Length: 373
Image 1 (tube, one colour):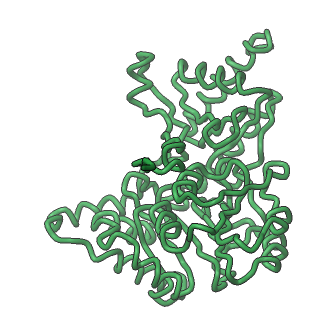
Image 2 (cartoon, rainbow, N blue to C red):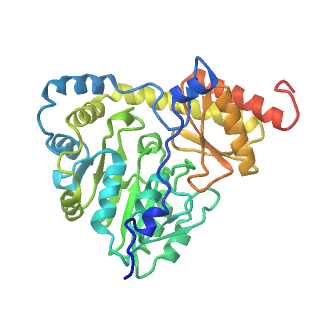
Image 3 (cartoon, helix red, strand yellow):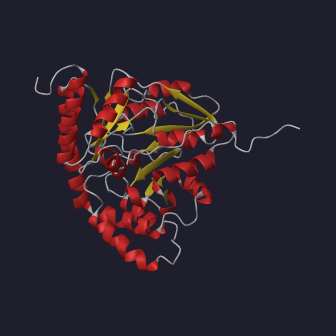
């Protein structure tokens, strides 16, 4: 009698998502006082004060079940001139992404995206056991023309992140318009706009709210610009038929009551968002110029992080460890599929300065010079 494995092979072969190093773990390992955590694209200003206050007001009602995100859905519908039936809320945009995988993929379907896509999507898509196909980057950008050529009869989902994580690059309105001409109506496009707020003022950026197509699902989050990564709150926009089916598979009581209240209040905190975007723009300039002066390959970014490409995996690993020893936590990208690259989030002005100085010391040592040379 054939023995059927308890765990499917496509699950057994998966590597779980590994978060970046925590401040406390680095502090314990190296005995340091100040840690600059620039690994996880978090908001260095913290969370929106209005969001924190709104969460606090909900605590006396934690004995009651949440309403499945309905309050937030109604606010988002008004904010973006939609019907509530076009909006879904969940435990971060990844929670909704997981529901998309469950709701729409059948065994014979295929997923199509770029190499080294967002690691969270890679894990979710591969966990379904369907064929996962990719095309290479074109100078660290999505190659939409190549993706269009790879669409076949089994393609069901195309995943596009704009701005992209981990490269920080965007594709333009013109590029997306040309790409969409080649996408059949039966193919679902996930437009992951987790970093939307950082890119929205770029006139070349294709805000997906201008592309309300029946086969496009927009995903956004409160984790980045609004500083609510710990609350796990995200949302999506799509045709009401897609949302109706997503609501069938989502957990009935997500997001939590405090998370939903935080999201509603954060949307109204325009002053906090403005300060966040100003600090990020300053950080991108400072990090970009400082790293480029060292001769490093810096990928231009429209998000809240910068990616650098190093000559080898060994160089990336060594610099990561040397920065850790100096109290600067960055993100090596081997798990994404880019073993020779490192991603650096923007931080406070002080943390950005510490990062550049630490990297200058590490990089200078690797080429046999002193930081002053």
